Length: 125
Length: 109
Image (tube, each protein chain N blue to C red):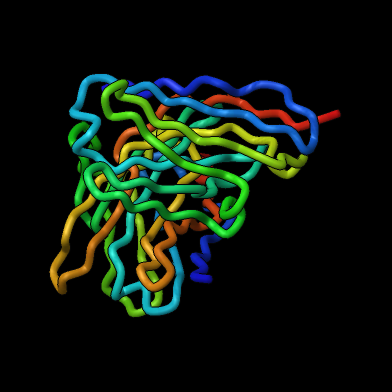
């Protein structure tokens, strides 16, 4: 299993970037996927989730309205469009495969069972 | 929004047992997952669904979620290589949000 992010770099405040995550070693279309970021020296922050076979998309409050998650199952790729960036968006951005299980009680659980190495987005003038 | 609270740091001597807590409102009704992150590396899943271990994770890592408001990651026989930051995570199904705790830095003395 491999997840390889790309598309990070230096961008000016107010600018945009499109991150990509190319995966291999598993049936991409069968899995839900997500983006998680980590600002330098800070904790993990979930940003967005997309269903594998279902057209479901979730967003964290910090991402909703500015970031857009998408996927191309034919190209085994996950994307995150970042718009209206600010210094607070400076972080490593990780793509992650989502494991989904149903536990006793009918509860669905979602966890990140495979991670890429991340791509750094720096927002600065 | 749903909040997960972890202690910022935990210290333990080699060979001893480390216990890392993760507090949240009625967390006992949720499924809790734990990640290990070493400096400069991506996180690694060490426990999922409260107490299950992914393939390749040593039995020294275990989880429980029996209390109403606190879940726990336990590492027995701590080794120097276990020094890392550990994060808990749940699904807030009411808001379709995936939530991380703030992380706990484990120091092996």
